[in-house]
Amino acid sequence: QVQLIESGGGLAQPGGSLRLSCGGSGRAVSNYAMGWFRQSPGKEREPVAAVSFRGSTTLYADSVKGRFTISRSNDRNTVFLEMNNLKTEDTAVYYCAGVSRPYTTATLDQREYTSWGQGTQVTVSL
Image (tube, rainbow, N blue to C red):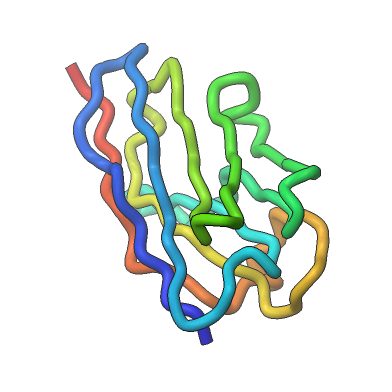
C-alpha cells in the first residue's frame, strides 16, 4: 500500500497560480497512473486531472483544460498539479490518488483509484 501526501495548497487570488505536489512512500508511485481530484463543500468529489504511469498521457476535466497541468517526476516519486489562472470555483480540497493496478494509462474514473492522500485545501479569493 502506498501513502500519499499532498502539499502546496493555500490561498490565491483569482488569476493567480499554485503548484500542488504529491509524494508517495511505501510503494513506488512511478509504476502507477496517478490523478488529482477535488471536492467543494456540498458537492461530490470530482476528477481534475490524471497522468499515465510513464507520464506520456494526460487527461483533464473540461473545467480546468488549458489552465491546469499535471506532470510527474518518477525519479522523485512525485506528481505535480500546476494550477494557473485560478478561479473562485477552483476552491476545494484537492486529493492526490493512485490506481490499483500498475503500468496503466491515465484515467479520470475514480473507481480505478484505491490509494488516496489526506487532501490539501486550495482557496481562491480576493
